Image 1 (tube, rainbow, N blue to C red):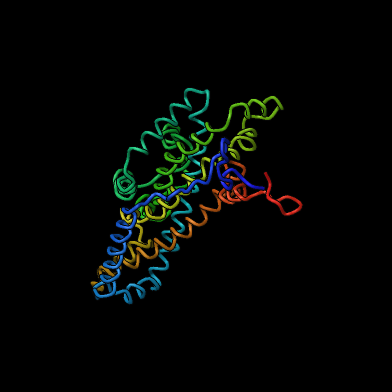
Image 2: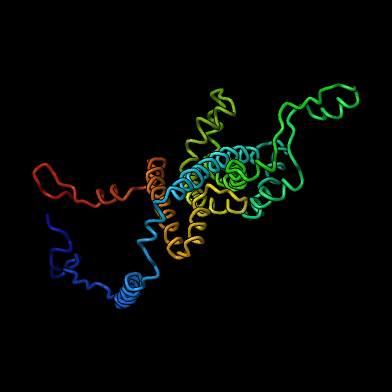
Length: 326
């Protein structure tokens, strides 16, 4: 079957003839390519010729046991713990922000305002140094138990557990709580944006079927909101991997950056130690980026047109006899 582009214009006809299109030239693309190639060649030359990079020593630092312990016990465990607290707390705060209860809305708003306005390194410094300076410990028990026991002359002060803040404030768990509380403020806005993106008709339909508010949120709203929540949550997780280096403000000894910094200071291989820690951060973040890609594709299925579907739609339709479709 011939097309309008294949047939020449007939005398007196209204069909167009053959169009001889010329591609648009882009000379500046080649200029940019040459500049980028020169810059890359200069960087490679610097890596190869400058012995101060000392890549063999950097590899040796990467595989030392204290560095591996800091990677697993500090960076990875710290990231997982902080993100669990941040995600759970963020969803609760988002639900509170969207609640019809004015008290819950204001509490969530103040929490989000406070923790989004404080740098994380300052928050961790307050946890590691400030709180132990103010309080020696925390007593868990009956509220005002000491005052009640003193007034009644009892032998017990109704205290069930005592926590020494001097010892607790320098642990990884204290750092996880600090990072998690800060992350919850950011995740609250991400979760709120995802919940708002779901049409209100979904909630009304679920309520019409007799579903409770909690069941509607868990079974109807959140699964649809994940398409909006997952991409920024992946970015926050990758950022949290790097923010675990701020645990040095507490300080947490079993942490990747702390251990590499100690080795670099002791051996005077400063640049090699930085290369080692950068390599580990790049490896961990690259793995998370791959996981984020598949999660986004999973939760985004059915929305928009994928590249494969678009390519398939552009293919010509072949009829039963092998002829091209119209």
